[in-house]
Amino acid sequence: MDNWNAMALKPLLIFLAGGAGSLARYWTAGAAQRIGGSQFPFGTLCVNVIGCLLIGFLSAALSGKWQVREEYRVMVLVGFLGGFTTFSAFALESYKLITGREFGLAMMNVVLSVGLGFAAAWMGYRLSERWLGV
Image (cartoon, rainbow, N blue to C red; front, side):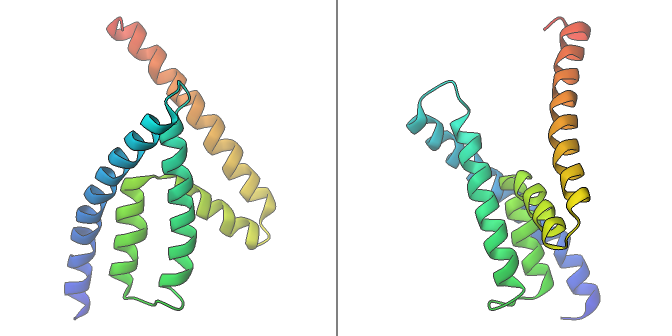
């Protein structure tokens, strides 16, 4: 496949795999939440942990022993797992910083991602309450 076709194919593969990953998230989280059956967001926790396991395993495997062309690797890692959970990308990036001995950057990524993410969710919720009377 020439470079132009590969470049045109990559966004399409990401798009299609992202939809599949979103459906997989919906089904997996729903099933896990029914099994867990509590107020705790067990479904989301399961999806995030499964996604982290998969992105770690597949990131190594698809660039190592099971080498595939880049557009297919990106389809799985960015498309499917991105639709399944973005937490997996966050975990892999933090892991790579740690293994690259960038401990300060890894800690900054964890603290800022969790802290700012929580603060942004809180702010968005409060803005919706104020502006929309929710």
